[in-house]
Length: 294
Image 1: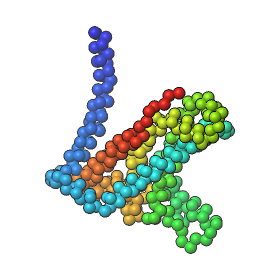
Image 2 (image 1 turned 120 degrees about the vertical axis):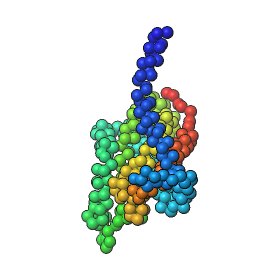
Image 3 (image 1 turned 90 degrees about the vertical axis):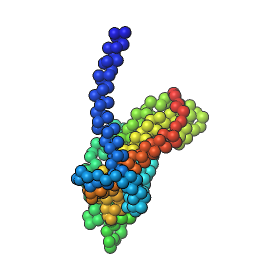
Image 4 (image 1 turned 135 degrees about the vertical axis):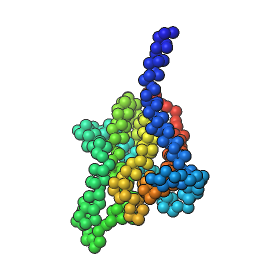
């Protein structure tokens, strides 16, 4: 009995500090966001006026907010699909094919992940520069351009951000999938070869099902983190411009806060929170499969 009580006391003492900090710095601020979304208040004013759902009603009529949500959804979907497709393919190639210098390629692909968003944004901003950026300089070698291509103009700014985000994320998930694929028994692939299954069939029938738990976990994590990463890239590369063409929901929320619409910005935060939660639930539901063992 004394041993059980001592063990429970020890566990409680270990868990209590983290629980208290989580409650103070995560739960309470989140609840306060929900509360403040029902009020009208300036960013630096202590005066609050209860307005109920007025802020949310205004969101439905706010064309720029709707545009920012569309941009965020486009970035989340596109970046996720491209990143995971390339990460899985590169991981499979480096794991199964006999390529010299596999560790070298792991390091090269992983380097973008250890760079800060500000550094990556600076690199791609230099690449996209209209006057003497690398992209326009390369294109200029093959054809004469009367006007430089505006890679961060209204039409191309979202694809330009997508490229930067994909480049930053591929290496990290490629290394994770390489670790999972390395654990798959080679005997399974040898048996598949004897049965006449090609590399593509083996990839979809053996590799993907056996590492599906890892894919599912990383997919959920990546989708949620992309919402925040999209904001960081937009803030560092374009600040939401030009003319709000690259605004995402989080950057628009900050701009409304800076404009003094504190309650309105909190309403945007609530929408983003609920969207993230619903998206995570949908992804978990859609990707739920029986775990395969080997």
